[in-house]
Image (tube, rainbow, N blue to C red):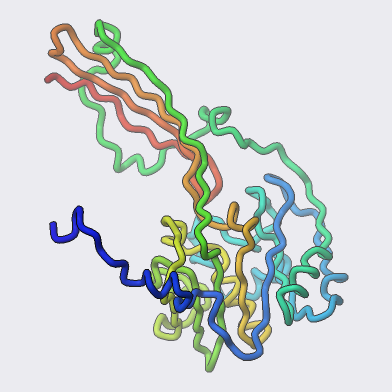
Length: 317
């Protein structure tokens, strides 16, 4: 109760509003190179050809990473072999619109961005589903072992109840677009990795990179002095830190990669589209109460549709 209802000074507030706070993309390093993401132009399908020859000849280009070379360069699959979340540049499969399909590294940001436009890609397009409500039948339950068991007999109680309320609720996608875009700056020295990242969980990122590059956790130094807004979108490891670390190791110089505002709509977690249906009833004289909520939501880790069901209950009051 020391803080509730009282005006409190933000510890980092003055540093942020005066520009003294240093974010992940603001640490100056000598001989810095820049990465830029090439994104998919379809929502679902397969890359049938990817030609980087013209882009590789562009001024300042140091290296281009795609699914054709990245899997061989990582000592281990990002996040581990059992990781079921999305991992970039691991296969030609496209599972969401705006998926990263290449990282161009060049001497300057402008050179990397220009060269990314020279990467030629062809796709085998598949039908995508973008409306959650049209895919409810294919949804599946998540964490079923954590769901409470059903209680009572909802169907009979609901059918006999004189007072009923049934309603559907839809919450649309909400994107996280904080002032500081996601990004990282990484470099290697004597087999040790240092990465400045926008992270809300530096120890998780440290262990993730340690497993990916097969080095001891103490050889990974994750630095996050300030977070310029995140709303939870940096709680888990995003897909770009291992790409930046890989690029820095391969070109043997520091590399920085920062999302553009377009990348910010597809490059990290967001509040997913949600559908919920709720049925409530009361018995005569308010002596019985029962409800059955159910719902579906997008699962943003795999860009799929997963069902989160709450079991029906019929409780006697």
